[in-house]
Amino acid sequence: MSLFALKTLLNNRGKLITALTGVIFSLVLVNIQGGLYFGLIHKASLLVDYCEADIWVGRHQVENVDLAHDIPVEWINRIRGIPGVQDAVPYIVGSGVASLPNGGFEPVWVIGTDPASRMGGAWNVVEGGEKYLFRPDSITIERLDARKLGYVQTNDVIEINGRRAKVTGFTEGVMGFMTTPYIFTSLDSAHTYSGIREGYCSYFLVKVDDGADIDLLSDQIQELVPSVNVYTSSEFSQLSRDYWMHRTGIGISFGMATVLGLLVGLLMVAQSLYALALDHVADYATLKAIGAENGQILRVVVLQALVIAAIGIAIGSVIVWVAETNFSTPLAPIDIPPLLRLAGAGLVVGICLVASILPFQRLRRIDPAIVLQG
Amino acid sequence: MDNECVIVAKGIKKTYRSGSVQSNVLQGIDMEVMRGECVFLVGPSGSGKTTLLSILGCILSPDSGELQIMDYDVTGLNAKHQARFRREHVGFVFQRFHLFDGLQAWENVRVALDLLGYPARLAKAESHRLLELVGLSDRTEYRSSQLSMGQRQRVALARALAGDPDLILADEPTASLDAETGLNAMKTLNQLAKTLGKTVVVVTHDSRIFGLADRILNLVDGRINESTVEQRQKASNLAGQTVSAADLR
Image 1 (cartoon, helix red, strand yellow):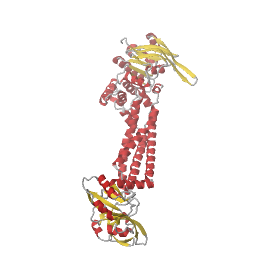
Image 2: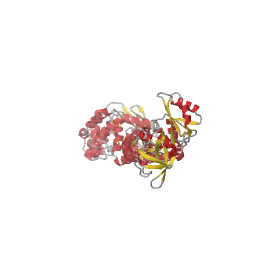
Image 3: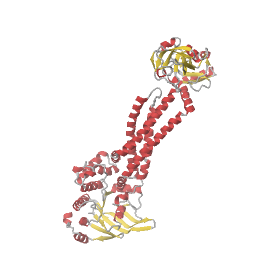
Image 4: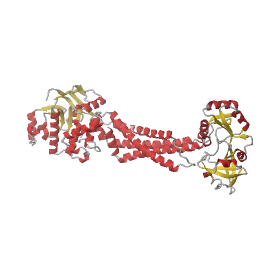
C-alpha cells in the first residue's frame, strides 16, 4: 500500500506543494519564533551564563541579575572561610549615565569585577582585553553600543556619572535584555561610575572546588549569611529569565504567533490531503472493493501525511539554518536549542497526523459498491 | 469441473429505499454455481444484476436469505470481515477497469498483493507473472493511460487473479471495449478461468459473448430464469453471433 500512497501523493504535485508549503511555514515559524524568543530571553541572563561563577550571592529578594541591590563586601569573608569554596569575589552591577560628546546622555549598566579574578569579566572580547582593566578608568564596551555612546572608538574618552572613562576594549554580541549598554570595568571604577558606595557591591561570585557539592555549599552560605539569597548559576539564570518572561509576557506573544503558524500549517496540510483524497475517491472505492479495510486506508493517508512531514522538515530545516546563519544578530539573536528543533519537527509530524484525520473521515465512508455502478 | 459448489444462494432478497419509495430489486434469488463454472448473469437494466453481483462479492449484504461462498456463510459478515473475504477469495473485473492512473501496469497488480500482505519482492515478481499470464509481459512498465482499452482490461484481469482467488466476478467486462477486443478479453478470461480452475460470474448485456458461458442466468424483476445451453446458443445465433462453442473454447 505504500506504493499506492507514495505514487498518488507524488503524482499530485500541486497539492503536494501546497501541503509542503504549510509544513515548511509551520516549521520555520516554530523554529524562528522560538529561536528569537530563546535568543531574547537568553539576553536576560547573559551576565550569569557567561560568568565562571558556580554560585551567586545577592541581596535578599533579588529577582534579576540586572536589578541588583547593595550588600556589604565584608560579608564575603564568611563565605571565603567555608571549606569547598575556592574563591569568592565581589561583583558590581549598577546603573550610570554616560555623557556623550554631542551633549546627550545615555543610561548604561556598569559591570564591575576584580581584574585579578577569572569571574565576571567581559567575554567575546574582540579588541583590547582584560589587561586594560587594571588601568584606572578603562572600560570595555560592546561594539554595537559604540553608536549609542557617540560612535566611540578605542582610546576615546567619555564621561560616566561625571567621571572619565577611556574605551580600551570592545566585545561582540554582548547585549542585555534591556538594550542598555554594558560597561565592563574594574571594581574600583565601577564604584565611581555607578555610585555604589565603597565597601558595598551587588553580588558575591563564588567558585567552588572541583567535585564540591554546589547545592550543599549554597545551603551553608545561606546559613552563614542570612540576609542574602544564594543561587546556583543555573537557578539564577532561570530566575533572571523568568523575571522578564512574567513581567513582559513575551512568552505569550511568541507563543501565540507560533500557535497561529501551526494552525495555518495544519489547515494547509489538512486541506491538501482532503483535496487529494477527493480527487481519488474512485481509487479508494476500488481499493475497498478489492478488499482494503479502513485500517489499510488509514495507513495510506497517514503514510502520505508522514511523507509530507518528512519532506517539509528536510526543506524547512535548511531554510531555518539559512535564516539562523544569516539573520541572527546580537540585537535579535536567533538561538535555537536542539530540543526546540526536535519539538518543531515533532509538532510538524503531529499536525500532519492530525491533518490526516479529515480525509480519512471522508474515505472511511466511501461505499465500494460505487465501482460496480457503471 | 468438479461438483463442489462455490456459491450457494437461498432466498436472497434486497430492497432499496429512497424516502417513501421502495424498490424490491432482488425478490428471492436461489442459485448454485459449481467450481470452475462460468456463469453469465443477464437481464434488462434494473433487473438486479449488479446488485446480485455486489452481494455475491460481499460488497453488499442481502436483507434476507442465505449466502454461502466456498463453504463460508457470508450472509451476516460485518464490513471488516466482508473486506477480508473479498481480499482473500474474490477477484473483481470492473466495467471501467478502475485501474490506478498514476501507477504502472505491474504496480496496479501489486496493489492487490500488497493488500494481502505479500512481501515487496515477491509481490513484484508475482505481478509480472500475472501480467505475462494475460499476455502483457511487454507492457508491465506502462501506465494505464498509455495502454489500449483491451490492454487495460487485461491488467484488470491480472489484478483480479492476484492472490489466487477462488471466485472471479466481472461486471460488464466488454462494455468499454469494441466487439473484437471484448471478445478477445472474454476469451482470455474464460481460458484462464478454466485453466486455473476459477469460478466466474459475469454480468453482461453482450449477447455476442453468450457462447462463452456454461450457464446463463436471466434476471427478470429480481428473479432468476435459467437458460439452457440450447437456448443460449439460440440467443447467440439470433444476435448474429458467429462464434461457435468450439471457437470459444
